[in-house]
Image (cartoon, rainbow, N blue to C red; front, side, top):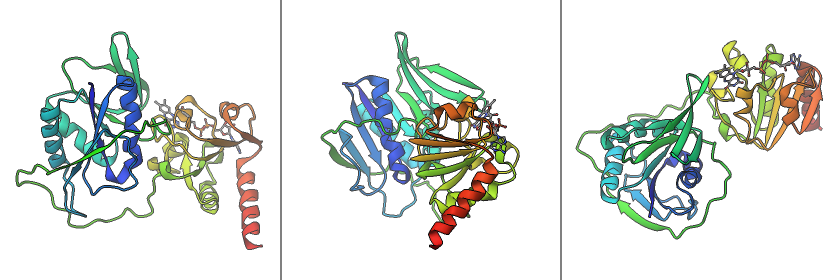
Length: 313
Ligand SMILES: Cc1cc2nc3c(=O)[nH]c(=O)nc-3n(C[C@H](O)[C@H](O)[C@H](O)COP(=O)(O)OP(=O)(O)OC[C@H]3O[C@@H](n4cnc5c(N)ncnc54)[C@H](O)[C@@H]3O)c2cc1C
């Protein structure tokens, strides 16, 4: 039986569960999947693993990527996995190269697609800031190791499995890191977590504060095309697209965004799109549920006023 090992990042469980679909695309339907979770059992975790290894870290203790890599290495030597998948979350990005080095195998980082061909599996990832998509084939004995970009395998059906739970002691060699303090970043947010995104592009360069205001009124977050990021109007952390983030909101409101292929790449999972553009033939309009032909700045003013009015009544 083909075996796959998945690291479950406790801070981004959903992105970790997506990797089961990545494993299915990698191996077909018949594979056994083991999850590694370095925290107490999350009761909301669905039964989608054959085996769940709980690594016994103390509650609220600091999880050291080097120790997790050691622990997963030992598990691999014992069970010999054909593939090891890690979500490309901040922690996953620290863990994956360490583990690949310990196992003496290659790592494909931040993959966005998997293709099975007659010559074997090919994984695809953006390279050179997204200017080309690199198709990479695994050679040698493996294991096939990759980190997977969050959100790209979202919403695909996950098969229920009979989950066996086992406990594993973390491997430590006495060396590690100690967490002294956690400082939350000031006013930072992750656009991938928002159900509503109000996104601005080249057509609204002067009104970004209004984008933020509308997003706030709708209970969502502001996002941007690369045009605004390159112009220094919006931070890179909220860029949507091939060289930015892949998002799956319920509603994506695109204001003054043309719809270049690199932008569309990041919003394929959006459930509903409203676009506002002076050009009703801009590429994004053909993908939109509602198209408003007109000036984005006026649209923002009027919608903000109407919502404020509605809230005050
Ligand atoms: C390697 C590479 C990677 C890239 N990665 C990304 C990425 O991750 N994300 C991304 O977004 N782009 C990316 N790009 C850039 C992408 O090709 C486009 O240049 C970019 O998306 C354009 O942004 P835009 O549509 O906001 O601006 P523009 O192309 O300037 O379009 C502005 C739009 O606003 C409309 N408009 C103008 N005035 C108004 C108005 N007053 N009211 C309403 N509408 C108006 C125009 O009709 C037009 O449709 C990448 C490019 C490369 C080469």
